[in-house]
Amino acid sequence: MLTLSLYVVGILFFVIVAANSVLKNVEEKINVSVYFKSDVAEERIMEIKKDLEKYAEIYSIDYVSKDQALDDFKRNNADEPVIIRSLEEIGENPLLASLIIKANRQDQYQAISDFVANSSFNDDVSRINYSKNKEIIAKLNNIIREVKKVGSSLAVIFGAVSVLIIFNTIRITIYTHKQEIEVMRLVGASNMFIRLPFVFEGLIYGLIAMIIATGMLFVNIKFMAYYFPSLIPSQDLVSLYFNNLPVLFAIQAGAGMFLGIISSWIAIRKYLKI
Amino acid sequence: MKDINIKEEYPEKNENREPEVSPASTRDYNHSSTRGGAIIKFDHVAKVYKGDFSALSDINLEIQEGEFVFFVGPSGAGKSTLLKLIYAEEMPTEGEVYFGGKPISDLSRKKLPYHRRKIGTVFQDFKLFPRRTAFENVAFALEACGAPGPEIMEDVPQILDIVGLGDKMEKFPYQLSGGEQQKVVLARALIHKPLMIVADEPTGNLDSTNSIEIVDLLLKINKLGTTVILASHDREIVNKATKRVIGLDNGKIVYDDAKGKYKIR
Image (tube, rainbow over all chains, first blue to last red; front, side, top):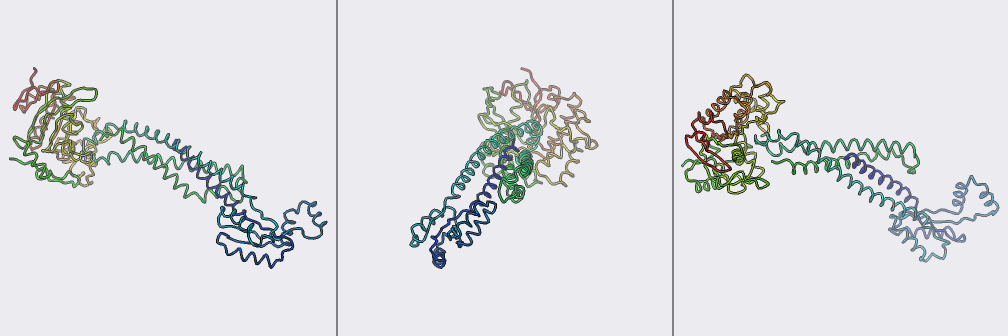
């Protein structure tokens, strides 16, 4: 049972790590694209870029010229001949030059977008594109929050049950060692001398549960990585597991030993008359 | 007036042991004592177990240092309870038990083990570890108190020699007779060089020859200065020893004879 609760803690931890990695991935793709009217000169855009770079909220600004935009567009739609042909049909480059702005923090995009919309060079701006990824991020954040909620309550429930079970086990051990304990007390063994073996027992249970839970999680991850290789873009599940193994181990060991010691201590308090 | 000073009379080998009785408590003791030298004093002690079962009521008695005392009486008279109050297995419901002038109820849980090291206990059912040899059983009492290895190696054979089991140290309890097992228990009780031996029906499981041997050993130990308190309903050994006999019945002291016999009321 303790294994199970640690297993849940492990899964919880891992899902959060994985979701965060996805989130980071998506966040990297988020930006505010400011498209300029086709008659605005490149020098003017560079001027605006320089102007914007002064703001602390802005992490980076990339200039994408009309030609570059066209190249990108052609590359992205290379396997759709209809689009390419219609581009050729038009003859001139229909795409607009743009500035790709990245913010330091995710919550600053709205402000940047608003700022550009109200700025002095607004007349030169054709449109501002933001909100493409906004919903995805909001959704992902929501999922993480939900997972955390469900996972923690599961961990708490399993944790409570495992405390009860270890408590019971220790109680039985205390009962079976009744005579020994009695003799220890009669010969004047110090309280710690009597208690420590039981605390130690609880601790061992915690450690064993931790090892099993970590192993189980590994098998699960392997399985997941094998059957759903594209579950997380740009990240291999197994390597994600190994990258986070020390932290995972520390959390599991800490939780396991804590639960083990707590439950044996309660049992000792209750049944080990000293 | 003889002062109780545990430290002086029993030089301590082990620094873990209870620090000496403080001057303040000795003064208290002198004040409350009428005769002095009482190692045990029961002051209006009553013990009521859960379920309103009254085991002892209004017990007043003093046991001097170096005395040999029999507690006799039918089963359920309260002998065992009385002994348990001495080694702090139970606490009195009313009144106070003093050990060396100090109220036992003042001992914190931490200090209880040190109190028990001053009292060796012997029981009818031996309470030996079946999977440990005689040597290991005795050594355990020292290990449990954190005694160093060399001390254990030196003291244990010595004490087993005293009880006459020098040649049976490596025997397991099942390889020993009842009398020999009880001697191991006695050795274990003595290993801390206690001020007092408390024996609850030590001969209850033994035939008369072995019983006499055990009591003789206890008498010998007593002669060397250790107070011995022995609960028994073995009339033969009580009468033979001609020591102080305290009769209990229904949780009350019914007689207290300095050179008593086992009486039936």
